[in-house]
Image (cartoon, rainbow, N blue to C red; front, side):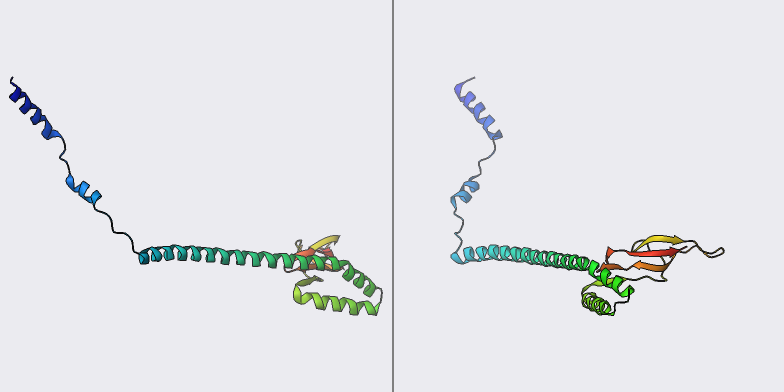
Length: 176
């Protein structure tokens, strides 16, 4: 083979190479337009607005959670104060049972002051026995032929609750 034929053979191999794309070079050479100061400011505004909305929502949620916790703590604290007053109410009940008229006014004033803020007096005389809010300390049998439902026949010590939570169950005598 001659040199000319060998050169032509080399050129025949070259067409398998991918064609060179000059348009990519042209795009790289072209500069993208610079954003205007107005476009930069609008983009920054959108970022700041999004951040402000997110932080505002987080703060509103935090405030709601904090208010809820504060209300729970305050209610629990009031319940603790009411629980500490139970011995005073018991002393008044005992004094009343022994005929002291002055203790009745004190007990009435305490109950009147505490009931509107959540105190619940559990005085279940002749009510069906409920183990959730009554403590049976004495059981008396029912007569023969009487159905077996348990009924409170005597309240030995009143019970108290605070906003649906039992502070102390009523101590009762149960028949049945």
